[in-house]
Image (cartoon, rainbow, N blue to C red; front, side):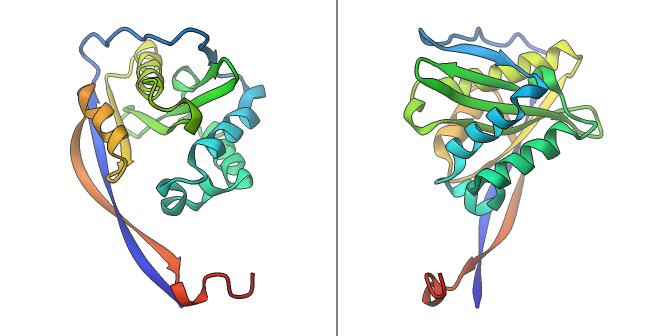
Amino acid sequence: MANVKYFKRHRMELGLGHLLPQIELPTGFSWIAWDDSLLDRHAEVKFACFRNETDALVFPSLGSRTGCRDLMAAIRYRPEFCPQATWLLSGPDGLAGTVQGLFDENRFGGIQNLGVVPEYRGLRLGRALLLQALKGFLTVGVRRAFLEVTATNGPAVHTYRALGFRSCKTLYRAVELPHPDTVGVGL
């Protein structure tokens, strides 16, 4: 028997009619633009970013390598995929973060799966990834961007608000969790 937990999420939006702040990367970090040959690398970084996070409960595909690979392929092969807003961030000891961009039916830019590998958090890399994706959307004429974030992810919510994103809708995602009495049974 499973129990259901509801996760509060915010849909946040930002008009792109203003000048974006300068992107500053720490020494030793660099951008890797989208290329189809990087699909598996994006998936691996996505897994490293989300596997032990609440979002892996909310979106189970983020909790496994296979799920992240399938999700990355699904994003890439959608007609709404925006390669100009899809980036990897390389650090001194390997890949540090990922973000993907999609268009919605109004041609707004959708930020997808922005993540920073745990050992690189606290360096404002999430902010840099977000700004790089927004810059990519601007290059293809997008004038409004949106994203969704789990409300308990305080650092992400704070970053988005500091850059001007505003909550426009509250969503609740129902997730079936195993009943505590059955965890580990049959494993």
